[in-house]
Figure 1: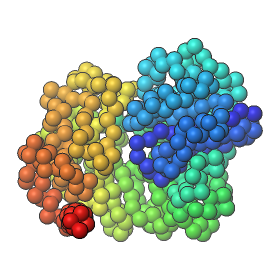
Figure 2: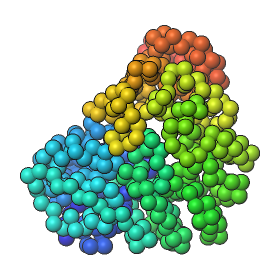
Figure 3: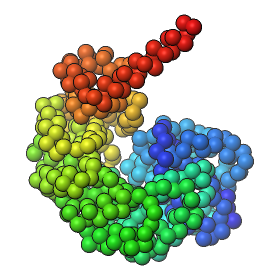
Length: 453
């Protein structure tokens, strides 16, 4: 028996436990291993890593790697490398940047892909190596895998959101997306009854859970199977709200949306990416802007909230073309817009595009969280869409989508720097923003009065 510690570093808190680590834990527990999971992205109440190391004394340590938290990962590796036990790493970052990781002698094993079928063998034979060993993972049959086990998570008694899958992988090849690199383009459907059986155990094992989330890479790819799952979910009368993480606009129909609404799903989100036809054409989504218009109209007609995500800075994008995205966003009438600024991950088509037509700084992987959007620095640009123009376009989009994250001290400075006064005033007169400003002003007045007394 080995004592195994899995770590998921983070700079923000999401409240959703890591499904991948829960799956690896389930595989190891079948072999009798003792596992603990320190998921800092799930909960900041997770104990300090040094305290865990001192108390648990693991024989093997595994680190989940996401490019957006590269600096935190490095800090964590520095801490655990002093334990003199084998250090394993896997996750999306290892797929894109394994060549760089192979030079890091603090690591012992680097997993590429889905590790369920190989994790037990590696853990049982793990040793400290002079240099990292690369593990190519076979694509597992998801119908033979055990149910994810979240009980070894620190703070597992506070899990309110339970993630699970009904399928894995995505056959599409969007130019910016790294999912096909980490979870394969081979789409695999899980037997519906397996998913239902897993969910029937949730209340018993995790009594604090209030919501279930379908964490598929592409839940709506096979709409017939997705509807079958929803119908069986309804038949079993599960007392949880259900949400879905990833759907495509071109696969939605009214029956599917009404089933989702019936199981408590209040919002549908899908990727729009860009409003300019030429930029959109080069993404390779396999759907049209008309598909997106139709889906947005359908979601609104069904009385559900609509969420749309856009990307600023795709190949062939410019500052001027960003206005096409803003115009398209207004046309779709979403309740929420999520603006991303492009990060070209190594191994994607957009990465090769910027290597050829612009520049990419691999040493910096930008990551936006609510308190740093005004200091966000792109890591790629082209002569026709510079970094400064990309920042201006990103902020312009945030202002025109009435995004409240811009309620920060540096807001007015950025408005003047990028000459966004018109956009700022349009943003400012929004009732939601005015309420937020009133709350901030009131808080500062109360602080001042408290000091003066």
